[in-house]
Image 1 (cartoon, rainbow, N blue to C red):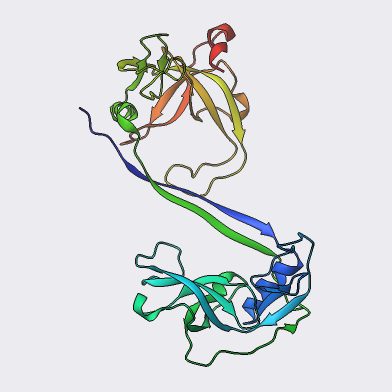
Image 2 (spheres, rainbow, N blue to C red; image 1 turned 90 degrees about the vertical axis):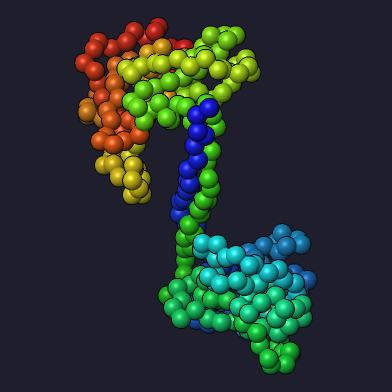
Length: 318
């Protein structure tokens, strides 16, 4: 039985949003070592502030300053910090009700171990050495031996020099992909410059890449069929936005990604088209794979020089 492959994969993109007056003041305040909340319609002080009342959904704008110390309302120990978390050593996730606030703020508590953490303990903000106007301007919380404060929230106008108006947060998902037996065989064949699909025993369609089962009939597809290597462009798109640099995506724009029906296959796969100006790619174009030195899969497909395929020969694969 062939080895089932696995590979670490990352999906990552930056998410940028504009900030309204409330969140702009909150994040700019953190940069200035000031914690702001907002007063809701029922008089409660909400920290972190929200733009709309959590009870009535009405817009709220009355900003108030609260303390930088507070009380832990609940917590959970994190023995194995992950990439991008506030601390690299084991820490506690805590909900902290800052002095003057009526709701709790989630952040990390730097503590030597779970025995040093308890509900009701006093903590204070540890400010980051360099602050840019983000929640990470609070590096973490740390134990505070001082007494509980009786600070009352003070009205704040939310005005700061050079306010923060946008927020960019990188969204990232790290996971391990296991393609299964059918696609493992497909990938192993690609490493030998061969393209292998699987045939459905019921409808007799050949699927590339194989999925191990026919998506139409729902039965297992165990019979391997070698297809291609040439094929036909069935449809395509022109990419005008440059991808972030990775091993495979440092490509000048514009370029073309296309669905390609390999000869003998009943399902089109997608790949980049090269060796031809982007504005000359067309439906019906006959193409063949180009392998980079040592590559485990085609780097791109290029025109074969054959006459274009007749539309009726690929119309069912669009």
